[in-house]
Length: 324
Image 1: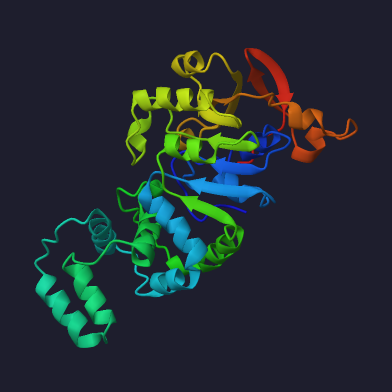
Image 2: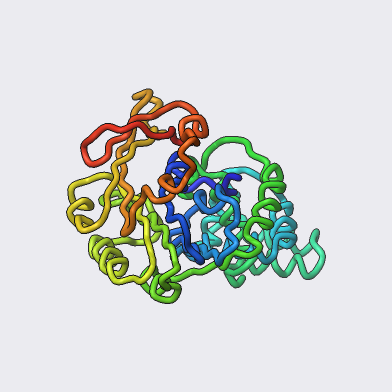
């Protein structure tokens, strides 16, 4: 299944390739930089422990509410399901806890008091006056609407496209069932890795890409890339990291297995049709072990469609296509 949201750095185009390179055996699966959860949602639930983590508290809270409070979230989303620039601006201010400076504030308060029954009227008054606690369902609903209403799901500018949020209710309900046994965390990556590290653990890491950190809401500095490498270097379990292919990352992870792959660059398709984006997968284990364990008569290309050429440390080999 797909994720309930689009998100910067989502791995829909690479996740089939990633699945084939996961370890053959592990007892706990941890997504350290969960983001939109595209890799997690795309694979069947493991019988072992699963953990979704993201340091962005709005993301973690959204998935927590999808898992633990789906009916309350759906009810909140169905309340005044508008799609306008004004609502988008209001929701952004609500999440950012910015002060409202609307000339219509007094009128809005009067309307809320006159037409809504308690306790709904009190809740709306608190939101308008910026006294409402930012948490749980209301916060999750506001964040989900901002993602859906914004241009390119970037959460910064209004998308100017009509959209009825109620169309996603089925998707949210399916996501609730998928996440029923998944642990939702909101931790710094180092603390999370140290907490869940075991010899039988597998960590999938999709950090902000090097020198593209400005596209992400959470600050991730150059020293954080080094800290991630140092943390992974000392773990008992196995890890896979996905990154943009660049000299700095290759040097940083030179002691580990590195495989170069490409995917369609969706952002460039308007002006450069067929453009591809180079990436690398990095691991502390043999990423071929799962494929090697498959029956010899099984043809990977029959399973995954047309052949695709990727580069393995400078050499061309045939590989299954990405799911775009």
